[in-house]
Image (tube, rainbow, N blue to C red; front, side, top):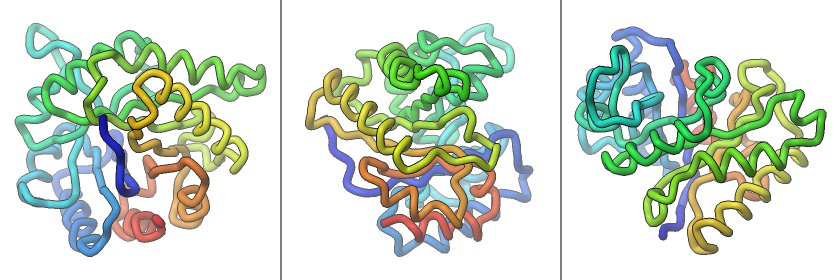
Length: 249
């Protein structure tokens, strides 16, 4: 069991950035050295090693992979294992992002296998869940989120550190953001489902993702139950990402 003590602000770079972009991570580290916020950056696989070398082993900025395979090794062309991520300096891994669930047709059961592999390798999984606009309009939000939590979180995570990000699919990269009431309602459900499964003392970071920017981050982060943010495009520029970090309570 574990309880989180501070806010987690994570930046998902997606398929962006070249070697010259490593300096952005260094700028984030230098500009947040006095922050009590837990900070994570998920760069493309190609930048993980260089970024880890630039930041150093003792950096307060945590690095993570954007996905991993559920097997330790083998004939899986183009895939990366959790152990390989750990080997190049990652300490976290992003799993179940909507761009994987929908774009790559990844089911919850596969996300769960990946989460097990990540925990086995000593990585902290950050597991994403979220409903589509159609599902919300049909009143299925609670059912969808409950199923995703139930089927994406394996029993192997009991007693391990993991995090959950709620990302309404319709708010990712669209500029739209869920209302305060929608966010609070979703987080109450997520907290309840996790408590029922893992116990009341088990309190992972619960993040909100979906068009989080410097001008709305403070409002989102003050909402009841929100323990951080998973930031997309705004994490690509160190200045914007730092504004979000410093807006955390």
